[in-house]
Image (tube, rainbow, N blue to C red; front, side):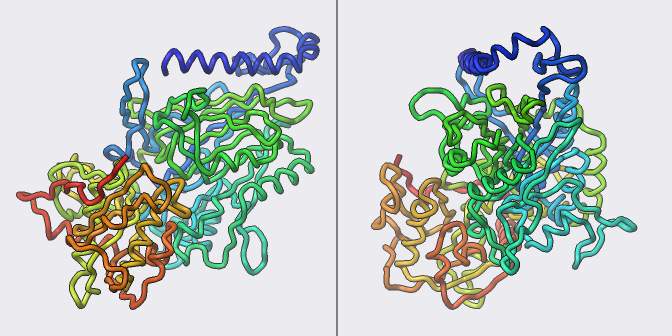
Length: 607
């Protein structure tokens, strides 16, 4: 952390402390000096003997784990850290063996410690977890002593019934029990889904909130997922469910908790924002022009009742510790810990036993890297090795060869090398007349969950792509669709990347070879797509002509804010996206002629 950042933070803390002292001046003067809660060493907690007026509650939090039990490979497993000289360093992070050690170390000396998560603990998971419907991840989270989590959109990938099984236990309805004589126990922490109700009854799908208690200290947790979950999950996943406004829901349950005498409240929200810097140690409250945080969480935070004392967020996979004013104008902490278990947030909530509320001026928070140079937690190592043995026959099968890293998830570019490979694989697999006659293919960027990494992940050797690695890139196994779209609908779809629900944070489709166009980011909305630059195999798109377009079933349903893609007709269903990807790797690579990262020259970006 730079000296300036430290100085700014110290200044803010001194000012906050001064504000707190001003209101508590007389009170503090009447208290004995030096009395504080046993085992803390924070200097908070004033009072008599064993019953101090305030105690520090440690809130540890993380989000968007996505079943990444093993350290994420390649650039997707790095955290950016700004150095004192202003340079940015990439630090390898994550893996539950290290996350467990980090959390257990952090808890030492904190008698009041609660661990909470901001959703997407499962779903879009690597093969080690995904192959077993994420039972290994729930087991790991139980061992981590997670106290509570909100649901995220990915908790709905396999529908409400499967989510209920993850909460309550029981073996998979189709695949049964994975280990002989062992029944899946389910999560021993509550999943909270305050803003998800059943259409038929109007009742909440899962618990809306829970209250954590210790020695008379009570903290309420309300959990919500983003209201737009149905737009980013397949229709089957959200069938029979209704998703409500995040702010209205949290305010409703905060009132209910308040009436029950629970005055300290934390909201777990699976929605987030984008800080001005991707470095985890960026000072989000810097006063400079363009500093701070943007995105949906800002308006949500400004609308949530002051009864809520802190917001743990997620979904955007960003790292931030920011203060956003509540409706009364008081600063309130809003945090997110990146993704894949690479960071955790440590927040101090000072609990006043007389008011049963959090002293807001004392709230402080910081993100910490889950480094890979600390000891591994032995119980997690044995969990991973147990499930790896079960997965090995499928996971280790070679699918193809690459000559270097082909970046997908870890690429910050709008056109990703791995996105081009996937789109080309889909076009090639569905171009034959009897397979759909596709002329162009689109891939949603959020569906690319990892990089293809050249370095061996196990004993397969460098450059070998195993089934497990391919699955980790495309874990949804969406069925492929080929549909008729007019040229006008094609153009509309490209414009929807940067307009409508995608205007604030564009979703740039990955496109197959032959399609080219210019994206002018100096313009706004749909005008960012230069329409007369759009060409297929060198020819301008004809608005009246019908084109055969390949995409996964999620996009073909209009998912991710692409209603134009949902207008396709004459649909033909093909193999899964993963099968197409593996077939392409097999056809285009060998040990002696590995697949090289493709050029990224399909989208010309003007900035």
